[in-house]
Length: 113
Length: 322
Image (tube, rainbow over all chains, first blue to last red; front, side):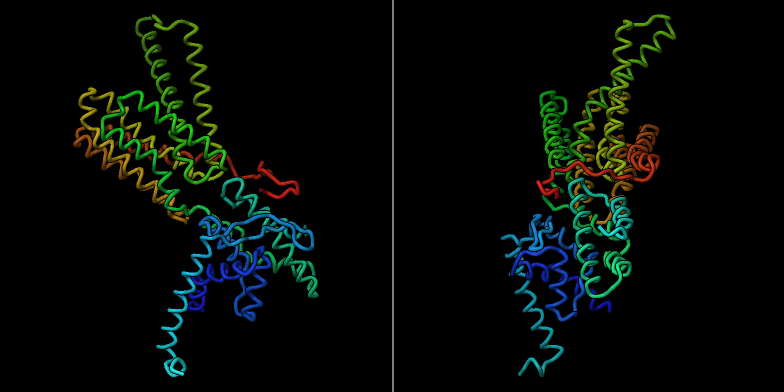
């Protein structure tokens, strides 16, 4: 469990940025989308999600704006910025390299095929 | 809003220690998230009470969530750390070049401090604002101390010679100024202490240097005091580093650690500056330093729990925080 938590801690911001790259979302919808896309593997609690969102916003990776939902409710939508796109691109490249290297060591037979 | 969410949100507001605009945004966002979650869970067949419990559980204890939000907001960027350290760096430069004797440069520094304080206040009191405010308030405090000194001398003169070397109107004017100046300074310190005493300590971080300097100026002649300018520059440089570390650290207990480490370092630097010849002054100055830096904590404690009013922040036509 500790290993999984540490792995998630390092991936949280990448996960958030990658979803916001697809479309702007507000916090609750982002949490639902993460859960659905990961088939329930990731369950982002509000206590984890909002500190990460606000940290990313302070770093200039995303920008929050209050907007109306289709149901005419006011929610704070987050939009990825140019700085966020660049950061995501770099993180994705690192993740691919890391995942490939780990796979080659842990599962050499699978990686070879 | 579901009434079951109100106690959690009220508790969260008490524990949140962010600038006004950020607090309002976080509170409204959390409220909206919880409302959505309760709505979805109720639609799935859960009772309102159970759905409310699940929604509040997903954020964890209000104090713990507030601490995570604090770290997210209060770990300043390198730019913010640089901005916060800048007034101390100016002080170091002034002393290193013996330029503190130049009234024009002092006036320029003061104008910069006031301008940055106003800018920071307009921008919602960001983390770098507090050191600048401390320097902007320095003349108020310095003139109040000067007034107190004049008062003291006049009272001493009257007690010894039965002669007051001050006109009656001057007594009244000085007394009035002293009361207003100290009240203004105390009001600002109390307001900031109530929000977060750690930042109030950051605001007065430079005052112990002033105390040490004034005490030494009284004991030494000007020439000898100017000869110790390098030590004063070193103190300001240390203040700049401590301030930058304070801004960059996210966790509150680490920031408190930075504030607490100031006093023993000042003791060492002041001892080095005086070559160990002014031990009583150094001890008095170090104790004063500790008192100054912990006064905001005492003020915050004495003023009781933080009761949040609805913050006065800019809102768009729909009522949401801009």
